[in-house]
Image 1: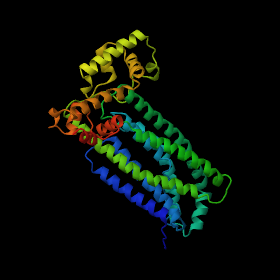
Image 2: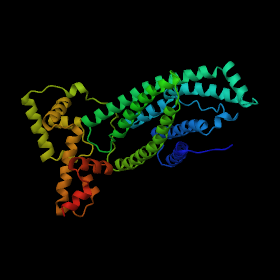
Image 3: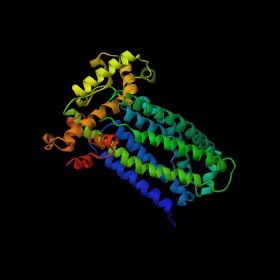
Image 4: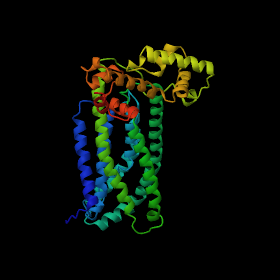
Length: 392
């Protein structure tokens, strides 16, 4: 057995090792959340999918022991990623029995693949394996059905994942200021990029699968190369998300336990567009300026739209509409702009020199160090450290 590795094989093999290593590292993290389990399952699934293409590129498929190696897991990735999205956007998400129904198609196809492999394994040669697999076990027909189901489920689960992510982000920006909540821009961008790539690859595969033209394997190499890169990306971003969540949960438990469900948005797009007359608009604006500039309500880390509306005595939908109209910002950005300005004031004030940057940020309403640095740079164009040095 002579193996000849090219650049593609090296990238894929390295990604498989990375996926397994990260799964082990995640296993040693203290938390036992559903998100952690789902991320581990995603990385392992991606690793096995990459092994699947290696059976072809390394020529292992021609050997009887590998010819029908059971890796019918193409339909596993879609529900796993959707449920992982749920774990990121729902505060109290946990896997239950109903969720296992999502994996039923993958179990059916894998069961058939196992039967084909076991029966084929005892055959003397590849030709006999092919004959039995096709004539008695309908291998190609089942494989076609699996490929078709992959395309359909990919579209359905992509839509569900993207809709849930967008719904969460709308809820977050229109009603929450607590900075421990992730904005999940990386997840939205990943879904958009993946959707575009899949569409492009699907159109390019038409030439090979339907028109039967040459170079039909190129689009598969591009797709599996993307899966390899996805392992690296999710290994970094997913593991960082878990660690950040563990640190933040400890921080919150020492201060205030937040019990609001996520996402249960009470602010809809129709609410945001609620029309206001100038009189109400001016009254709401004056009340908002009062509680922020004089009462410094933004220092409350868990401040949300419902709290603000209750304090000033106006409906939440009207308060949100007023913030959009008068300040040209969503609720989250509006509150954080006050926090950033307060941080800047304290960095220029000698009375706060004994505090660290993080200490000042937390005193001003931030409750996530990573979010503080990102938000501060977004509002000022500089990192907090750079700004602090410029004031000295």
